[in-house]
Image 1 (cartoon, rainbow, N blue to C red):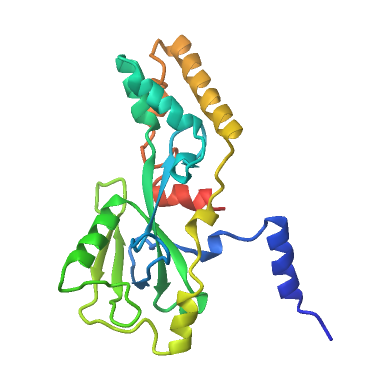
Image 2: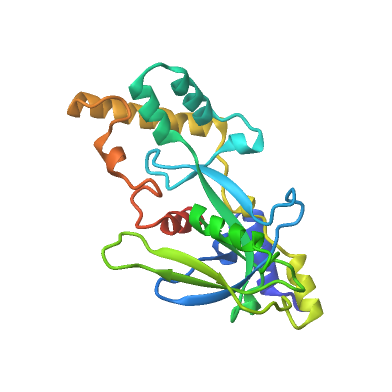
Length: 257
């Protein structure tokens, strides 16, 4: 019997760690409107979406998954605590640069792309607040319910003169089933990807080296520019939502490659 070459290749990629993480992710396209159906993550303490915390602007890294959120030793969080305990303005300013930032993930079905199955959409605080406000509005309720939830229109636009694009969400006027095919909907619900598997959490030693290298580069800048530690001109002018990237989505797209 002939073997399935594509199935063998997928298995080899999985064993080799070459499985494409980006294939299950989605992001809105600037200037276009998309319609999505949000699902809830199972076994997530009653929360529909997952929050992950990342460190930004440390060296050339677009984002570093913070180990402390998983209960693991975290040298960057240890440094933040130490800096906060110092009665020193420079220490306080450096600690602020190191504070982790939240990224939120939701499993979705993109209308018109149902053949791709469940995809993962990552967004920031503003979209997160909008979605939670919609769900807390009794006129809408649980928009992630597979039987009586609602599709959501997602629009990404950039206003003239603004550096970043803005993403807005608006629920459809009528509730609807996740799918008209019961087996398709149940299949989607049982195959929701885990966003924590999309990012590598670096080891304690790796993070220690990264943060030490970054601190040493700032000290070199102090010698050259006369600024205080943590006052590297490059670091201070870098956008807080992704070093060297036009948007946070761009930073995360690179991080998932």
